Amino acid sequence: MDRLRPRERRLFSGFTKLEVEKMEKVLKESGEQALNPDFCKRLTGGFNRSSGRAGKPAIKWIEVQSWFQDRLQECTHKVSCPPNVSKELCVLPETFPSNKLHESSQMPEDLSELEFEARSSKDGAWYDVDTFLTHRFLSSGELEVRVRFVGFGAEEDEWVNVKKAVRERSLPLEHSECHKVKVGDVVLCFQERRDQAIYYDAHVVEIQRKMHDIRGCRCLFLIRYDHDNTEERVHLRRLCCRPTC
Image 1 (cartoon, rainbow, N blue to C red):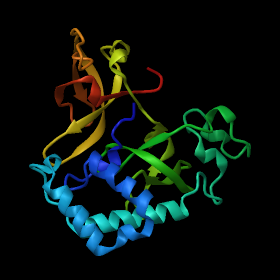
Image 2: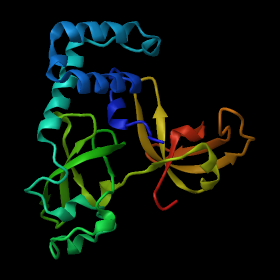
Image 3: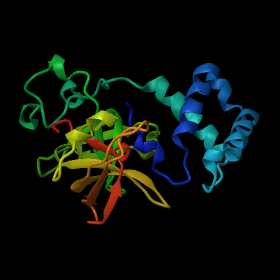
Image 4: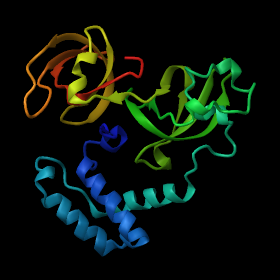
């Protein structure tokens, strides 16, 4: 099960998951032809008329064209680990100790396929990392990396602290895995508000176990968000667990 890619939902006026999937398909089939203004206008009109956009701000065709431009640029320049970045930065910092970052040029094979998420300094939410672009050491000796987030272009790149704001990607849960979530667990919760829909860290405060039905898990989880201490009851589909859960 894939979780919603949060960076694609960062702005409330942005694209929905279904719209992003549609554009990904169009880009794969049409390539640079997707940049044609008339084509973008027709696609935008379809999005704005769809039931999935009911109650949401209308999209401008230039936003669709800009999205295609960013994705084409990523496809052209994206590499798994840029040549100016040590291979060690492509592995989980918590697993590969920072004091050994320059002691080895070999990346452990069992970590080579890990995916990561980073916490944005703009809103404190966690987003999937596409690429580690470069790195630097602060005067304090702390290591920072510049990251490119999934679904966004260079204008959204950020410097983040490796120790405090980079970690292995949180995992979505299948309906049958609700028993893995316990009171006190740290989880990543998809917070849906009128002006935003993004992932924040939270703690599980209480669990109401319920019988599953044809729709899957019906349990309710009372969570408390770490960034503002607000509480909310959510279903399993909005939770991701940490890899150590």
